[in-house]
Structures are given as structure tokens and as C-alpha cells.
Length: 193
Image 1 (spheres, rainbow, N blue to C red):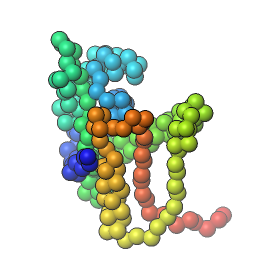
Image 2: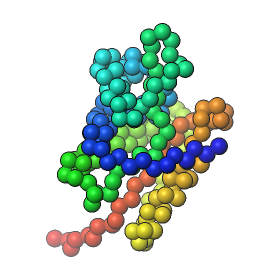
Image 3: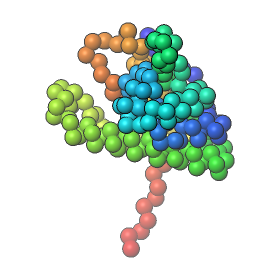
Image 4: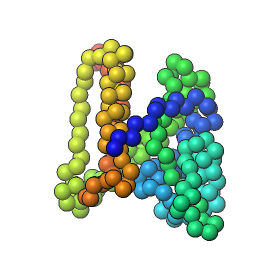
């Protein structure tokens, strides 16, 4: 079963700022990789203060970036999850200066996490058995119009969504696999000095 969420463009500056916070990014990444958790469990896993973790979860919840999982709650225990969403930011040409700062910080945090994940994989690759061969990499360049690039991106998102499925539909032996895709126009290389 394919989960194909409609794209949701984040135009609210406060929501972008909430996303661009380092601790909140760590919380969202953990929930995305490991599924629902309590604030105490997240604090323990991420080495954070429980009170601060609860605060950050409430702030993320206020912006719809995490949600309660009432069916997991026992007593006063509150569980949180990151809903499957296709979050997008407006094109740079439509961003205010403040939005650009938040989007740039978000991109910096995400790239730093990507590099950390890659380093951890490289360090433990030999311990993963057949999954040690799962680092598939492709670098290339293609000539596209701006409209074709947008079409290429949407096709990539559709492909990802085809493989997203709830836990109960995940085949035995499946693992969470991180996917990353970014595009940027090639910049002219200057003359050697």
C-alpha cells in the first residue's frame, strides 16, 4: 500500500524556526528512524534533559510536526510520533530574509546529520553483514530545464512514497534505509590562477 501524502509547503516563519532548532531536529530524526517514543525515552536516547525534551515536543506539536499517539499511552505517559508528511519550503525567491535564515539553518543541520550518519555507517559497516553492502551511491549530471527538474523531483518523491508502508505491512528482514537527494545547478569553474 502506497502512502502518498500531499505536499505541504511551510510558509509560516515560526514553524520554520521550530524545524531549524538543533534539538528539535534530533527529536524528529529519532522519531522518524525509530518510531513513537515518550519524552523520557527520547531524553535518555538523545542525552537530553527530560523537561526540555517535553518542551520541544510540545513546540513541535504546536506546529503539527509531531503528534500524540494516545493508543500507546499508559497513565500519564505520553507518546509522540512524527507523522508521514511531504514537507516543503517555498522557493528561495519567495522567502523573506528571516525565512532564508531559518531554511539555511535547517539545511545545515540536515547536512551535518547526513554526514554523521554516513560516518557511523562507515565505522560499523563490517558489523552489518549483508546490509554492509547497502550503501548505494550515484553521482551524475543531467541537462534539464527548470520545469523538467521539478518533474524529476516529483517523480523521485512518488518513487519514495511507493515504498513507504506502516510497520504491520513491512516485510520480515526489512530495515529503515536513509535516502537523500538534492539537486543544484552546476556552477561555472573559474579560470585557474
